[in-house]
Image (tube, rainbow, N blue to C red):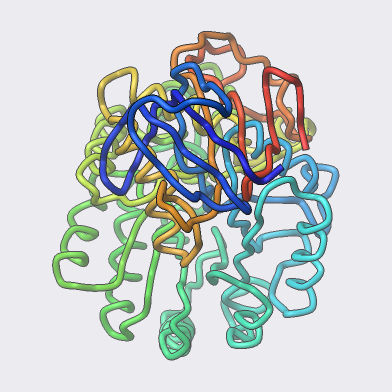
Length: 427
């Protein structure tokens, strides 16, 4: 069913920055009409919140090559349960997504198995090795929405500048991972007293600033469109601010883990808290929340990175980095709302509207004529998270056993219900 009337809902409009009690009508898979106040008939949302579906940037799916960690089917189910209606996926798979043929395989698998929309990114260089540019034009034709080597930072600035110049000529977006690879090599936590007390190999926050400064200099030189996948340290913010003030086509994102957790959460070597870049000091976390509120950081994402049990049950420095986040992105983000740090329209500006704008995707807005990709949620439902109840095939969440507040009630993609908590429906 792609036609419906949803009434008595609190409509979150990130574009207008408003929260209004009203109704929304879906017709033919699109938002047909929106209004304020009461309306007869249809589905009574009973005062629940209704917002544009989340567009999650940088989702890792284990196809091809690591399907045992996450498949498109399980990632799609987790996304639907988390209110994520579009996954923008990473190319850092076991077989990198660096040719049109691999990209077409991934696209076909996603269409067959995923309950939500999937928009793939492709590798910037062949095999993500930083030596030779991929066939960017052909990859765009095959459906790539952006180009990135993920955390495999290109060390040769001449190679990266050539990639940027060619990408600019095609209007392609490059997604960078701001990190100086030499300074950050082997780092498992952020440097400081805590790292020293735990005896863990650490990386200075300056590595992020150095990586960002280099990338921004190349953006200035080439005029490329550039998005920093994660800015997590206060020391990097002035460079980002200067680049935006200078008119460079630059945006930045941050993971929900860096907005809601800090370096002390590592505790007694808890490897579910090992992410890349590592969790930062509390002062950095607070600065990042302020940067999101002020619009300096544009996008909040999950950086969903599934890892199997064996790769996490190792000494901290040897354990794999990454955490799953599709299903916990919204509940974790609601911590910022409950703390009074961000309003719901501000949250969904970073979760839905800005990702749609930056990656050229339909959605992210509550406007007639846009796709009916929607999430209905109650921000106040309390519960304790059980990682084994997650839909993801891998269960490496840092929120396991933590008290959460906020549940997704229903998710629509193109007007069709893909998740319904009350009726147990899951696409």
